[in-house]
Image (tube, rainbow, N blue to C red; front, side):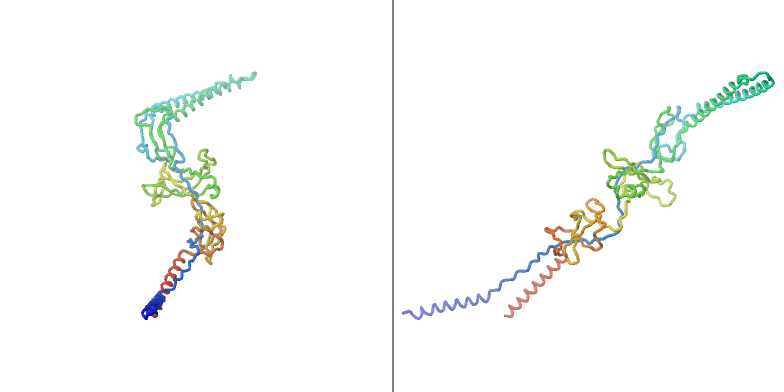
Length: 405
């Protein structure tokens, strides 16, 4: 027969277990609910701005004079005079004396030619008088007709020829005397001088080299497919030339004067020729002086082209099959067809299809579908902040409830 102790111990253990179970059950918390995950794709956008646009064609080139001349001696002799401005880099006016060849021999030749002409004219006058005398004598003879020889006509023609030869000699001597003076053919800058005072030059000797300062030229290579953006194939178009002067970027304005009309066999480029008047600012009468555009300078050129009434610039990688993705007013993806006027580096110029205020999607989407719901990057941040605040509020309410229990 079981003792009282054997009966009480199991009952105590069972009661203790029930009590412990009750305590543990009261401490158990319900499982936390998982936050809802928003799988809406997040995108970044760029707001479109549409405005009138002028197209430009970029090029480059070297500045050269429109005219340049090699001065050559046309007579022989010693250099007896040199102008102080006849030095490399010197500026001279048209017809200004640069150098003089010894003129003494040519002055003597002129005097000799003038003397020969005077003798020829005297002989001509004498022969004319003798011809008149012969004609009057033949008028008194009635039974026969005079011959040309008897009227001294051949002699008269001979004297007339001598006069003309003498005149030619005088003209030649005067021209040779003029050629002893080396003068500038136009307003120019001296590029080089090949003579010195006292040096002897012969016919064909190089005197120097001059560059015209009235007009500068720049040959601008342009690809054939760029001509469509220029009116009249670029002729009379304005050009902005940008170069370096005195260490600073400087701009000059020029005008396209002609299209050379030939494709270079090596570069496969055509050439437009831009002209700039008075590149060295020698005729600038205004008080405001601009920087000179020196011959030999390398310049970049922007040729002003056609005008587009309404256009905007879009990155080329955002265009797919002639369409771009925009975010509409309902925050949905929408593809629009655009009209690309020109591709310019990594961008394209769009003339139609986009309007002011359109939100262009600039971020990549894994599986874009027209009409799909999207979220802006800034809106998503605001939603996350609201979710955090809501979670904090719910946790605080739960803690207060437990404390009250």
